[in-house]
Image 1 (cartoon, rainbow, N blue to C red):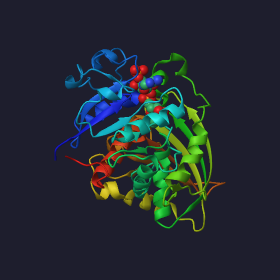
Image 2: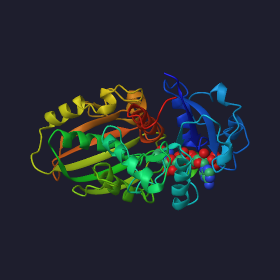
Image 3: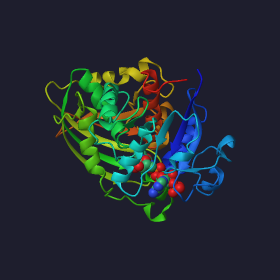
Image 4: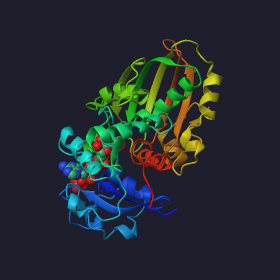
Length: 365
Ligand code: NAP
């Protein structure tokens, strides 16, 4: 298959660097464009990330001398780019929303990590194991926004949601709908971007507040689990959710402590573990390059999942679950972990793009 040329918007940041690392040997995609703010524009990628490169591989040699483009300079987009991954947050949400649609209006598919368009009702917010049917809203989005046939915006949810929502979806699919969820997250420093990893006052402490995170955590599942309407995604408000989100001194990996009550019948713990271990969705059935096999790894050992041991399971794309137990106040409780910058950001967006290719929303030449 001829590789699809992609651009990375926000290529110098934590998520952007993860895209570079994950795409460098991707069987379907090849990097053709790197863009960032005016601070980086005009520099080579090597210069723009000098002293800021955080990945555990060297900057790929073929990208060192690529000139970084200003994300706002649409005229300088190289010919042939067929898809943009966006890890850019402009100064305000409205500007970011418009910026993503400006790329779509030029005919580019945009898969974004920003929260700006997550609540745009005709933009699918995709966890590929849960709601790829929501991609069908793209047609209505193109009509409503006057976009050309190839252009659209799809987004990823918040970086901790996939730690537990895939597991909850698997239970719903198996006939055990969930009524109430209490989740406490222990979120890694890299979730706060470059500054999160480099500002020393964030280390050796637990910060009990991540501004805006609890609202996103409580709200986004309703859209992801929502129904595909004619011209919008209709959120499912049947699950009551309470979230408390904290920042912990861990580099990568968001852990979630999850408590839940089922709507009706309560499955046995063995049944829950079996449902999770055997769970497969479309990305696994299609054997997409970034689909973790298995999607959920269930650990019986009491001291798992642990960031140090499990964050890279499934090449950083799997969800790892342990401490599955009964609880005094809830039907069950468990601990879930996923890699925030891989599964929760760049890798999750790449898997979404693979799904878009598989479903022919992104055409190959
Ligand atoms: P980051 O490390 O701070 O990187 C930000 C990137 O955006 C850099 O490339 C930066 O370019 C560029 N940028 C910043 N301000 C800009 C502006 N005004 N105009 C154009 N470009 C600008 O942040 P990050 O962690 O990679 O996050 C990027 C996006 O992904 C954010 O929307 C974030 O919420 C989302 N996200 C992050 C994670 C995570 O785990 N980190 C997970 C999910 C979603 P320069 O280097 O040139 O300044």
